[in-house]
Length: 79
Image 1 (cartoon, one colour):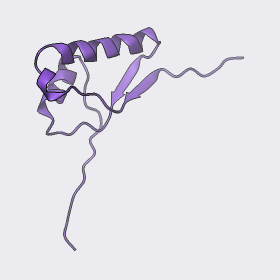
Image 2 (spheres, one colour):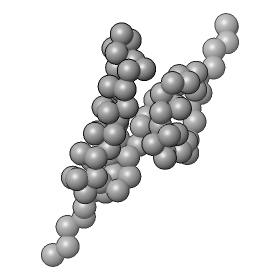
Image 3 (cartoon, rainbow, N blue to C red):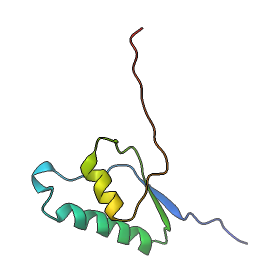
């Protein structure tokens, strides 16, 4: 009997301690995470809850070939 297989994963939290950012360790961290997911058979990865103002993270993801497909926004209004 055919069993449904999961082909995607969601990355909830990824980051680097500030003193190690920009030294290449963050890039290795992201690339190795991607390789590990591919080795497990995942074909799609979703990086969720990345702020639009997080320029560094968005640039890294863009360089890894990822693209934004959904945007969440929170608005505030005093009552």
